[in-house]
Every structure is written in structure tokens, then in C-alpha cells.
Length: 139
Image (cartoon, rainbow, N blue to C red; front, side, top):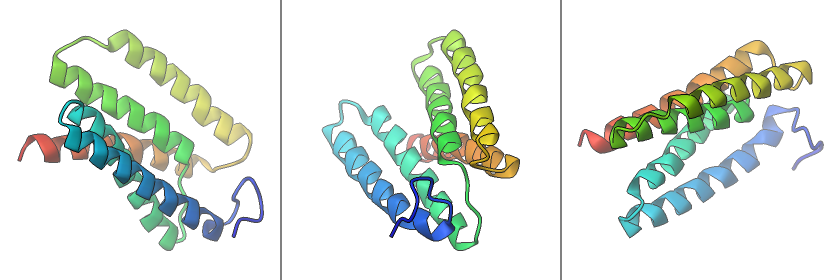
């Protein structure tokens, strides 16, 4: 199913994406049912949603950087986490923005992705986290 460790083709990326979608929803559902860490469950649901968007884009012959999706998702989660608990995480967010710049530039330098794939992955990561939060807490 996978010819290269780098998963260069779109077809090679489909099965791992489906696998991670399944894992994130299993973990998210388990955490949500525990009712102790339901905000953390949204973190996994946000990643799952981001991976679903990524999978949909694969069918449109577009790949996005999953590294960018991951760091963008973490930043999106910390944004709504700080909003929900009314705590200042500005220093942590600044460090993560710098770290995300290093991660995304390394993906470009390694020629693993094009600039549009990296930016799209980053935006999908942040947006899906915020969408999941807004859906669950505006019901």
C-alpha cells in the first residue's frame, strides 16, 4: 500500500489518514464519555475533523501537510482552551507560533510540500479546532 516512507503519492496517504481518523474519534469519544476531560475530547474531535478534511482533499487530488495540520490544531486548541478557562497562554502561544514556523519551513526546505500545501494544512488545523469548539459549546 505504501511504496515510500515519504508517502509521495496521494494514494499512499489515504489509508494512514483513515487509520488516524478512526483513532482520533475512538480516543475523543472515550474522553467525551468520561465527562471529566470533555474539552480534551474536543481536541481529538478537532484533529479527526481536520483529517476528514484532508481525506476529502485527497479525493480532489490535493494533499496538505499533516505536520502543519498538527501544529495548527495544537495552536487552535490552546486558543479556545485559554478562552474557555479565562487564562493567559500568550507566552506559550508565541513559542508555538515560532515552533510552527520552524516546522513549516522545514517541510518546505525538505521539499516535502509546496507552500500552498503547508499553508492550507496550517489553516485547516486551526480552523477545524475552532469549528469543533464552536459547535459543541453553542449547542
